[in-house]
Image (cartoon, rainbow, N blue to C red; front, side, top):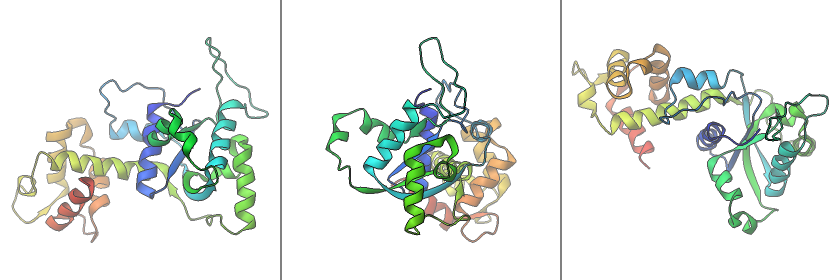
Length: 246
């Protein structure tokens, strides 16, 4: 129906993690039906908001091509699909493209008119949109251009959206923990490394009991465990905090 803050958050997380200029994700695979009054989304809520395995790729396109795709997705109903209409006249569109917060803000200001339509930018988006899912014609046309110039990523060259967003959120949670506790505070047995049990205790203390799931603990370890030994040493701790504080 419309751009949502949940959609903006997901797109912004993907954009930052894959280092793209813009990210767009269509509304069909996102639930985005819940209001998070306190601005907090738990790990379980995050994974449930994206129940489908979106395959994210990054491709080059002009600003005009991107704008045309967004406008097309928001003005047209997919051929052959029924569309629900709300009392206020808004029409449900599976292909409605949500954007990251920066692009969203730009689109609401006169600054967007100063941007060069012919500038080539990197855009992160679900692969299936280029292949014709939701029938967003400007993206289908772009797919043909990319194929003709061998500029389309290989079939196995993608990252699942939920994995990207979980990684982004885990870094944010490390930043929250690091702002309140030191490595020494967390290293309860003073062995020089943080075990999964010690990390779980930190999550309980700072983020709450419901966040201290096995899945989240494992994801938080994985995102900064550069030597893959299943625990966090002080160098890995310092590295993640230095990146999240930039």
